[in-house]
Length: 162
Image (cartoon, rainbow, N blue to C red; front, side, top):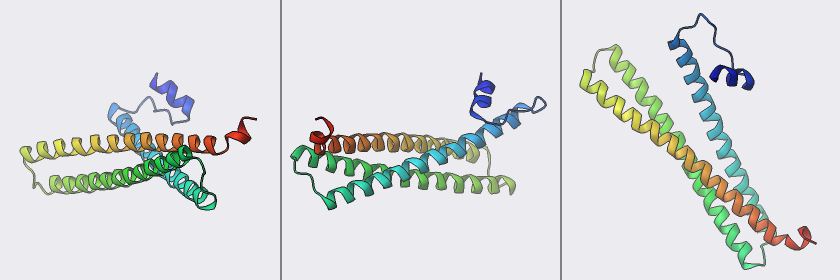
């Protein structure tokens, strides 16, 4: 089933001669690439939405109190999404830096089995934190976009629903 989805989505199909380790490495590369693309897309959309909301409020502040409330809530959640996106990027950078140090330490035989086990546990925590930050970033962006749409519906309700 995974190969059928891969072909449908345009991913390269693994060769029959590839062994499992090559396939796992290939899919890990694809997963990392797509994670980064999704994270950057949500960060960009959050920044653009925040800029749009600020420009709308600056040009013509809403008159209705509920529209103001939704604009403020939207801007707050979009800022939260941006901050979470930055934390996610820094967490990934720390993960990459720690992995490079780990591989250097293995190459120069500076780690014993206890050190490897401790690193794997720390690395597992970093990876889990990265995924949680991305999920929170997506949810806060979604909430901010929903609040922004709601504010616009309130502001332009007379023109929309005649």
